[in-house]
Length: 161
Image (cartoon, rainbow, N blue to C red):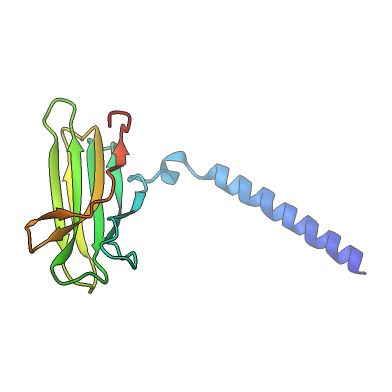
């Protein structure tokens, strides 16, 4: 009796798979394609440690390249600052390189351990050829960046650096 039940269950599973495959074929291709590309994640990126216990600032994010209705690149990020002294703030730099224009750098700062600081930038006409990012600390005592991590490409052509 066990053997016949297993065969019956196997046969019903196979039939269900065939029916599901036929249903998927019957769906028009235009309905199956999303209007937006899914976001591509990047990170986490870290600063260098500012103390012997290894505490570091961190950022992560994603980008979406929309090409269907006109070229548009949206880069978002979250910057976290945990366990740092009050004079140090997490600092995220994003460098945008363009084909026929100068490089543009954008930054965001997060002081304190609660939550995160968000960043969002939308570029269209022209879209950058590449975007790279690094995480540092901003030292309020001296007014400059310190403990920077390495530059990392998060979008585009990474053969130039």
